[in-house]
Length: 137
Image (cartoon, rainbow, N blue to C red; front, side, top):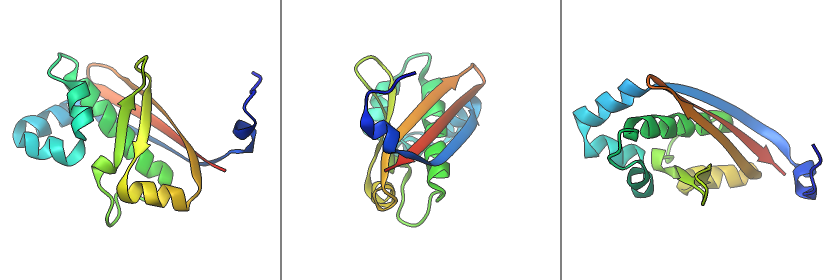
């Protein structure tokens, strides 16, 4: 494969994270704690995207896994001042997932010179998985 973007050749892998989540774990937490749980973990935009469709809990679980994978790739976990909502999974115009960092997570990533975040998510009826690669300049 030939890359035409010179910046791509200058980046180095900073960290890789992976996480797998049982969909029922997210579904049960959501049903038990309702909006309190969901609004602590997910942004308004994420909740709107997941909607009330039959695939809601698959989508929520995949986003939870992506948030965990991002924090693993950073090597921090959810440390002081960082919030779950600081890692937001958005969909581009064709539905491809993208990670947008906010707050303390964004500040930490900037301090580590993170230039790119790559995410891949998938799910079955039972599990959701996400893999995140962070690249620095």
